Length: 173
Ligand SMILES: Nc1ncnc2c1ncn2[C@@H]1O[C@H](COP(=O)(O)OP(=O)(O)OP(=O)(O)O)[C@@H](O)[C@H]1O
Ligand SMILES: O=C(O)C1=C[C@@H](O)[C@@H](O)[C@H](O)C1
Ligand SMILES: [Mg+2]
Image 1 (tube, rainbow, N blue to C red):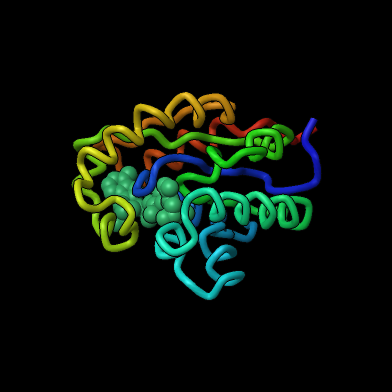
Image 2: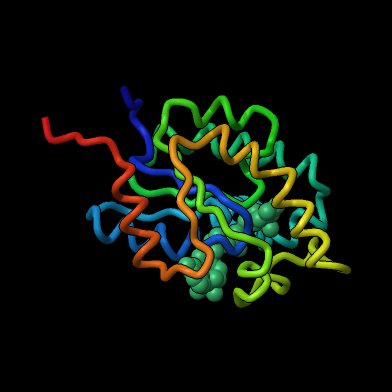
C-alpha cells in the first residue's frame, strides 16, 4: 500500500546520482522531479552545503525533517533527497510509507565524480577520509529506509535508471 506522496524517492551519498537519475526517472514516468536540496535552499536562502557549515549538522537536520514532513503529502512525483537527509532524526519514519531506492557507489568511483567538493564544503579538509567514513556509517541507514539498492559504480545513468524503474511496484491493476 502506498500513501499519497512521491511515487519514488532516491537516497544515497552526495554524488551517487540522485539528481541525475531522478530527473531521468521523472521524464520516463511523465511526472515532476523535485530536488529536496532546492527546498532547503529556498527556505533558507543558502545552498544546502553552505547551510550545513553555517547552521551546524543538528539544526540543519531539524530543518530538513520539518520541511520534508510538510512536503511529502503534497508532492506526487520523483523526489531526490539530500545525501544526509535519511540520517536526520525522525526522517526514516517519515519515509516508511513510500517507495525508496538507494543508489550505492564505491569510494573510488565517487571521488571521480565532478563537483563533489565545491558543492559540499563540509567534506574539507580531507574529502577522501570524510567520504570513506560517511559511506561506512550511512550505508546501513540508506539500506534500512530503502526497498531496493541499485549499484551505480562504473555504470551509466541510463543503466542505473533501468534498474531503478524495475523496482517500482506494478500498479497496472
Ligand atoms: N552513474 C553515473 N556515472 C558517472 N557519473 C555520474 C553518474 N550519475 C551521476 N554522475 C555524475 O556525478 C555527479 C553527481 O551526480 P548527481 O548530482 O546526480 O548526484 P547527487 O546524488 O544528486 O549528488 P548531491 O547529493 O550532491 O545532490 C554529476 O557530475 C553527474 O553527472
Ligand atoms: O550528504 C550530506 O550530508 C549532504 C548532502 C547534500 O545533498 C546536502 O543536503 C548537504 O550538502 C548535506
Ligand atoms: Mg543532487
